[in-house]
Length: 328
Image (cartoon, rainbow, N blue to C red; front, side, top):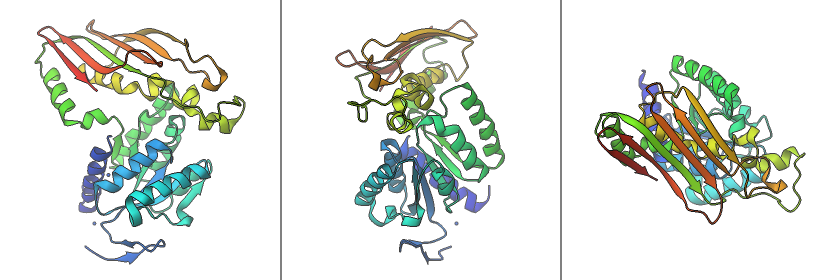
């Protein structure tokens, strides 16, 4: 790895750990009036909602030479709100010039082509494969928030693009934050190293309240693209449902405990007990799934988003010598 590539990689790694979860001293002035040098890492934010704004803020906090260079979102008000908050927190480091603020469905292309070094992909995940492919093709380093896709075809696109990223020496960081959480890393290392014996079962949960909020619920417009986009967690084509969009963290811990082996089959159930009104789109509010692994081991997943119910967000691994609990 060349020195410039290595320096960029080290900065990206620092950004990823802070977020998870991102080459001499020639000074030049950017169009916003900021001073850049060749060590400056220019970040492009694609998707300016709550998660994107948070990831951008964490990136700006990770290293003094990181600046927010460009932003893109489908909606102007989302971008403006995000930019205002980031400037209040980070001042000149988040002072994105007007010519690098992009709005519309092609905003991702413009951010990628704006001269950034790394992109933060935090739009609704239904768009993630498209944006990931474009960033890889352009040779940009990537923070790819989880989930990487919402369906099988999308995952296959991600896997193919990831191969290209590896060939091009592009740094790709996912949003599976627990993989970078030192207490969790220590716990799962002991599981994998055999401290509880051979793992025969993992029970994992992601049970919360009704965390998703609806935009303009008084007049739901299921046929409106804007209404669906602004209420993206409630639509499978955009979010993959909450088992994919949120509970995937718990499923990732299950996979981790099994040494990242893939299951051979799964059977499950789910439904809508409380989210029955039109403003909740068509996602479920609970899931229960059993996964079977090649050696006969089992993984048990339960996730729920219902107010007034018991919560729980953890993975519990059972082995031949004991058990281990990773509580979030």
